Length: 500
Image (tube, rainbow, N blue to C red; front, side, top):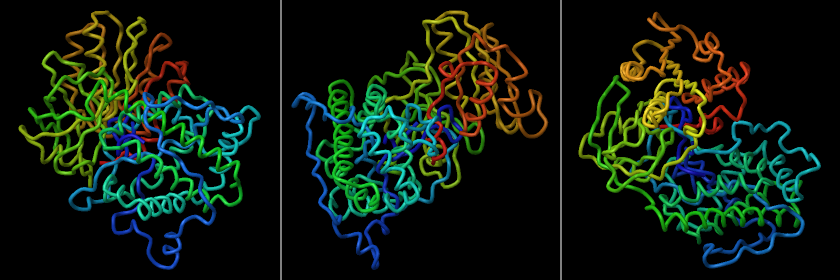
């Protein structure tokens, strides 16, 4: 759904939303593999064997009134809205993507709790549409790759004008569609949460050039792919449930984009004004937006470089909002990382990049005096540093405990900055944690180090780093008594696909 990559939530280390992140309907093959070929692929050129219910364009909220909900189902929200827009293909096929150290994923409410096992069971409380959609998802789960590939073949054969909206190399996003569907299937009956999530995606998709008229084509091809492969559970009633769900989903996104257009640009131009290489593969990149850029400490945004046109990646802001309007990001180049490598090794002052809208909810609640327990792994220290600055600017002496993890002392690239902050603020404590090799700080895994201190009952927890660190960190924090609603990070499931 949102952006083409994931950012880490908490994570800068493979972290990230997300979005990354080409989104729900990210093509799963490289350009030369998009069109069906060979006997089986030729069959894929054919339209589905049974008619597909049409999905009509919907316009915007200002142009229509929402129809009364269908009598049987609750507000159908199933499939994560197929995101028709992504990036236009780069000038050349980029190398295969590896995981980016600090990218944030598209936020997915509850995504960290989504698991295939047991997700599709009928618990007696789900709406009829939810039951039908979940049964379809259970059937296609074993062949998700095939369904996704067929969807894109159908989309590009029947609607070739949409092909330029997608990146040239799309294989790394192969499973994003199904993961997004899992999340939407779980949230189908919770319209409030789903609306909040989809609204953010609708706003974020403006930077891809997504238009209202693109949604019907995407939806009809989705239905076409499901019709072909969900033969055991498909029926007129099931098709109606999917059409209602997709129509609702796309309408939410279209309305959110239309409302956002009245307030903000689809993207911001930003000039690189600072580039500091902290290690051979980590750089602090500072940019000046061409117009005011509102955001909150702890959030992230998507970046596009001039070297990979319309390929977006998510990065956390490395500082709280500044009076001079400058924005900073910590970027780690990874092998075959398109955007990360360009930002670390190629970007120089004077270059111009583009920024998407801010996103993320890993922000400080200033209505409480709870302390902050912050775990930052690798470049995941970037948003943690921003949170510390945010607390300082609000002038309240709230205890803030930072555990900064890395593999070696050499990888603690921002430790001097964090220690200076600790010297300036008596309420701040910074503890470096190194997992490999000798160190002057704590040794071992970051979550294990947290157990040595505390108690943390009166603290709100913030985690940013690679997916494994976040998962183990969340388990540790829950185990020592911090309730889930006071543990903040971006969606974990998206982090595993963080790429360049």
